[in-house]
Length: 122
Image (cartoon, rainbow, N blue to C red; front, side, top):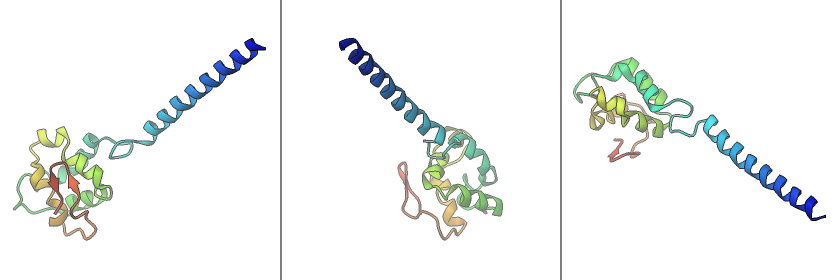
């Protein structure tokens, strides 16, 4: 009887371990990052039309830039991750200027007051 019980306990332990590993794996597949299944580095490429506006606060913001900011900005944590990404910084984007773009685009549904690293969206 003790061998049967020992086998059952091992089976339950292994089953439990597989369940935990499976759940952890599902979370990653579903996209646990701030931009879902895409990385902020991939999303930053979509903001290419914003390059000048993200370096100079007085530069005009193009319609194509505003469209992309509106799309990505539906998820404020993704927008922040994109603006704070290494690729954004290495391409000359000034985060303190970039965070003003949603306001400069006159986006009514922008996340005013959202904390983006050390910055707050105006």
